[in-house]
Picture 1 (spheres, chains in turn orange, blue):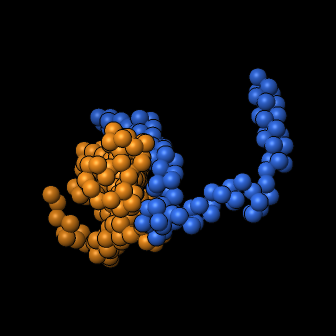
Picture 2 (picture 1 turned 90 degrees about the vertical axis):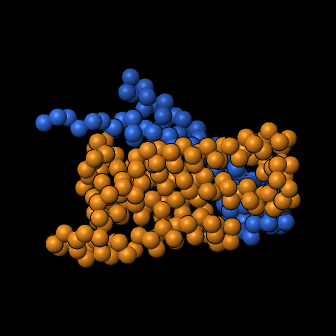
Picture 3 (picture 1 turned 30 degrees about the vertical axis):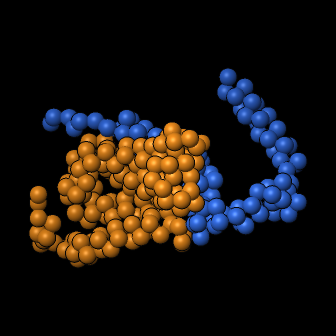
Length: 155
Length: 92
């Protein structure tokens, strides 16, 4: 793994340093937007875009290889599919346990939290799935478009 | 053929615009959506889902299918871009 703290002497020292300081806060804010979607504006789509933007910023300020060290292409593919699978899986499991598709109250038979609490928690699970998919698709789109499909070196 | 397609498009558009004349007025309190659906969401969403943010409750629960296929649309967009653009760099 190349050292992210290694500064190349040049005009982008300021950009690299500020991005290095900003990225953890951007990611934390993205997670906050996803998790706090029950109480404030936000949710999976918005939070996922913010999380994806953190990786895109890393790829812009350093290079594409650096961002691929933090999220490899395989992990990106995994997250893409995992997110969609979480969403559809939650819907399918609630259908299997006797409810309708995406009727989270039926999951109460699996883990007894109470049907209304399951509505709340089911929405949370679904939003997490949306966040995974949106984050990795945003990064994937940037990688592909900026490197014209080769995913090795971009802008 | 191009002219035929243009005429078909214009005719469909005109038909759709004509259809909007029968829609309820913008924000009409007597519109079917405002008489039972919106009041149900506004009054019962917190009791039924324990989610204080009604928008999240509607998106994640009442309109779960919609949100699911929005996710699938984004997924398909990513897959389309990958399948169109993805390639190995040629040896130079």
